[in-house]
Length: 280
Length: 287
Image 1 (cartoon, rainbow over the protein chains, first blue to last red):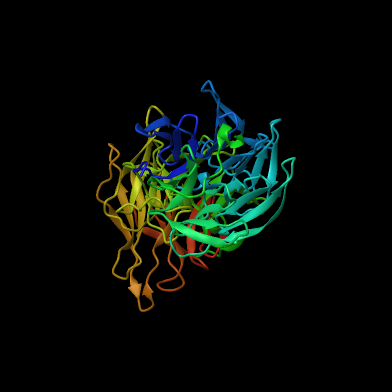
Image 2 (cartoon, rainbow over the protein chains, first blue to last red):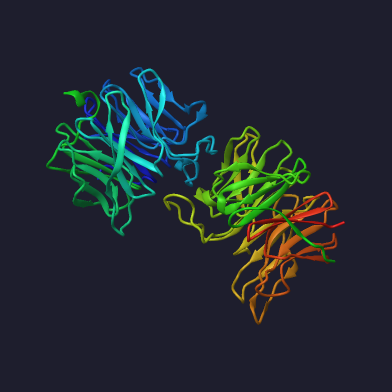
């Protein structure tokens, strides 16, 4: 166990250069970090109810601003820079999770959960968009609606070669897979996997390992699905699992967030590195 | 006294809180998570707000703000004139409270709201357990503009409608225990100068008959003369759905029969508007 006593853990990401693990407590309104042999410490509080996080190729922390209704980044000098908050002049919903492609294009899911879930309030709780899109931010600063027809988009992740983007839908309890064009456009979108099980847990966080297997939170913990959509097995996790991220030097440690805790476990297959090491 | 109520607007599912504002009637389409705007002059109905997370009660405030009981998100919010929504406070002693149902504002700007349990859970993950009590709570703004919340009743278990008297000296509360042996009554709590409540007087009690317990009161409002109007009852048991009019002496001075089970009520001039469980907005002229 890495941490406990959280109210709603989420947003795990490993920073290999720092040798540190970062995660959030959404309702606790805090970004935490954990250093081996040191332990956990507050990194940012208040956080604008930060949710999903990742690192770009420059090593900058990218944050899905759940309560702040924005996507933001921490610059090397520590300055927080808002990258996106509106789409066509309208305030977006509440960014949930975030990924960045090797060319710098950022994709995030934009359901409206922070507008209605108790304890996750931001500064404006009015929803202005009539759908829950997946957005893309191009390097020139343009916000594009990448997918419009998701019921409640939540986790998202690329295949190892970035030719596919997986997006899960909490309300429909399934994962869809999209083909990714060089210019970032998405096509396809067929259902890749439907979650089954009566145990606690929903489609939430999602990641891919180095062999292309998809790991998604769901009933009982984490469902592991091969690239063809076949369930390989489930990793049972105590508590309600929210997200996961690989880390440590060999990227074989899986950090798992739940409502209340952060766990880590060792796996045989390495995950996909994030940050500058992704191109190594 | 009896009047014919006519339907003037409708929504899908249950309707809820209703207020008069700027000559219009705003009412909650609770199951649709919308607030609708009825224009009495033209008869037109338009959408005032959408995505309201089951707002069930409304209270206007002179600055143009509207306070709202957001049952689906377990908090009291403020609807701002610019279209945005702010939360005031969702915690009582650090704990997220239950499901606000109705609210009223006194002359000092304090917001009194009923906080019953709800059979419909809040939206999203169920992170917070409900409180160990269902009470009337009060929000009070501090000089630093933050809001603080206090529990004001300890004798309620199913608080429903709330209404402060015109002189802010009395808080009217309906208690709606559906158990045949439970209390279903309209209470009048004196509001002391220090803001606390005294022992309530029971203005009306709903009983039971061979068809079952009588449905209690779910809507309260004041008319232009400061009289209290209570909408209560059902077609399933008792004397039937009605608006009860209480004189300033606390006695019933009249009743208006309703064609269906009411949810809430408000007055605009001499007109009475009543929303219903069946999703209609009814109107009658009280003369």
